[in-house]
Length: 369
Ligand code: HEC
Image (cartoon, rainbow, N blue to C red; front, side, top):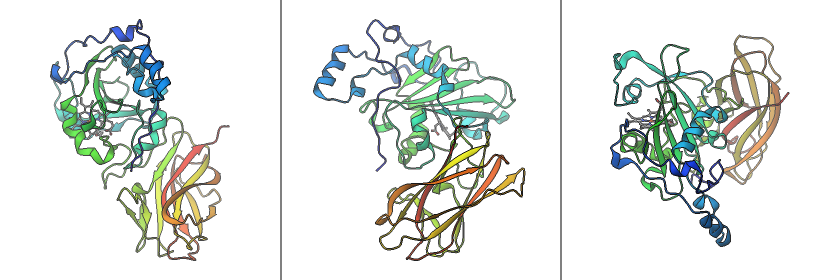
């Protein structure tokens, strides 16, 4: 099961005299959504917080969700979130057409094209790379829509806020909202049917498309380093070579499996905006009695091409009792400062048991200088 850990909203608990409580008045109705879609933000009395502490109810249930002003404040400070897109990426043409404010239609047609930047709460960033991972309460995801020409500011922002359990169970308790490009006002927020129309198709992904981080097969965009410098290489995006090795999609698997032929390899390409020294962790599982395979991680500089290769990383697979009993292994660190674009290949060197391992993901984290 996708675990949905609860946590407090990343903001202070508002007092009743806080302006955020008094700004529940709807923003000017420029919104796509009918007024009926709009939900009223209900203030939670401080006594409720105290009561929840006494009764041991998770505080998040008592913490007030952000009012309009507080939400706008969070959106304006989006640089504090994790930016998933190092540089703006092209937006799907159909979405670009539909993703616009209903008023002031722009003279240009849908073929003009648009780009997007994606931001997410730092502790929820990893969930965007895993098809099955859920999101903690309080997660904020923002999608800036930018015009095709570089340099121009956003046209608008669409966003999703993971609300308290029970807010909108049919849509994973997500609240949807939109702002103008300058983030001067919320143009809509609430249980927006106009957004749910598409996002409900992504129920298995907790209603988040994850299409920027897990593109449709065929869309070859390599994973980008996030603004904090992390690179997540999940099994779902691995390129496999060989006879048996494959990505197994079911939720209880969600891994590279059938590694019965040690000649099979898995690889990923990725791009670094801040090359440097990285610590490398690999999440593996291995059935009882099959541990002990020696495996190598080889790094190849693609752009600019370089003959100076970091020393391959070697490790020995650990028996975890079951192939889908995953454990994260810290493998060591490597200097990847000589190139921006890389290929990482995982090659078995031996296979003492029935299979090498199940491999779920590899994470590269920058080592602070
Ligand atoms: C026509 C279908 C469609 C509609 C309607 C739609 N979306 Fe999306 N949404 C997408 C697609 C496709 C993506 C993937 C990124 C892209 O191509 O723009 C996406 C991505 C997002 C993301 C980034 C996280 C993710 O799911 O990957 C947010 C946030 C978002 N949409 C919010 C909204 C909001 C708010 C509305 C309503 C105002 C809305 N969307 C309406 C299709 C839609």
